[in-house]
Image (cartoon, rainbow, N blue to C red; front, side, top):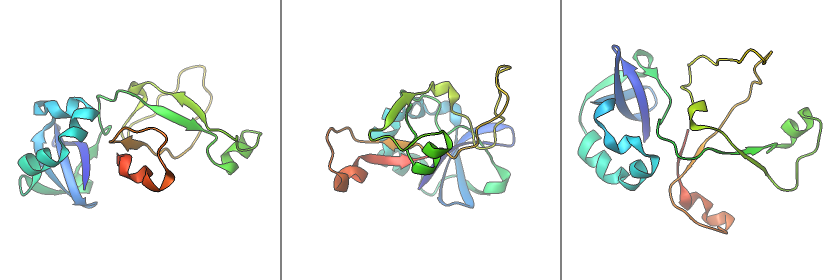
Length: 155
């Protein structure tokens, strides 16, 4: 199931989809306190889906929606740099033995079709695909075969 912040007919909504082409627009975005925290969304997911989404709202074609940034109340954005060999070579080096970890401000998250605003000091955009893994269950020293048990979703 997918969850999205969308705009439809100049109003903000929370929408869900089981099919990527058909979204069920349900609830005005501003009324959902559980969306103010990623942690609250994860903690209450099953109940929220059952109470707010199942069988409610009208189905809308994805082409009628403007997709906005996925969640606005993100607590941490932890990034991994030079995480594949080709990108490391592009940057003039080898893939590091240990991951390069850095963070970004939550305000740097934008929607899939939003404009990228370059500061005057920048000359070009570095085109990359970004994958965000949303961790839903904490842990330490997790074995590789158990890692997916800690993933809530991705964006």
